[in-house]
Image (tube, rainbow, N blue to C red; front, side):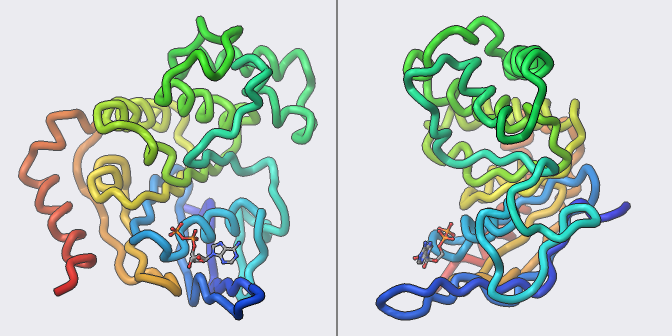
Length: 252
Ligand code: ADP
């Protein structure tokens, strides 16, 4: 399989008035075509920084980031991004919010509208296209964010703790939903989380990050069969994998 994403010896140091902050050091990783990779790390270890670099929103101090065959220098059409908070324009409808990036991405108006409606239907929100974001629950809003991420049919999905602000039951529903969408669309995914369960449930492979400056300190293949279900969460093999990962964060 060819790589959908490659990071080669990437480092990022923020320059602040109070001094330099080394957020990431020597990060090398790759995501294969169609692979679902989760990055698991403690708060402040540089996960969001890593995602912003991959999305072309920041530039590495050192190293190289490749999406497909091209080096990332700015946000591109090959990637779709979802953040922890969806940043909607509250005065625009759900449909208009999904269409927000269409102009920047140079999408044709009519076909973008059609695609936006299709993506809303796929995340189960076809009937809410003309509602406003505040009329939707937190979980529904994140599903709108997923529809918006898929609008331009990107090959690589970058997700930064998309379910972190949601309650436990909604998170579980959205994990199932995301798995379904991923199986249907077969995109490559880099999914950032600080939830061990979420990482093990969703990913083909989990990469563990060290505290800041973040480095990849372990890679664990998740051999659990798919589709994974809510029963998976209670199975022995699932729990053994979670426990193994927990070992990286248990400090005396
Ligand atoms: P995480 O997503 O794992 O919680 P972040 O990538 O947000 O971590 O942050 C990693 C480190 O970089 C933190 O110590 C944070 O304070 C620092 N940092 C993040 N963004 C900036 C910024 N814009 N300017 C300066 N320091 C930053």
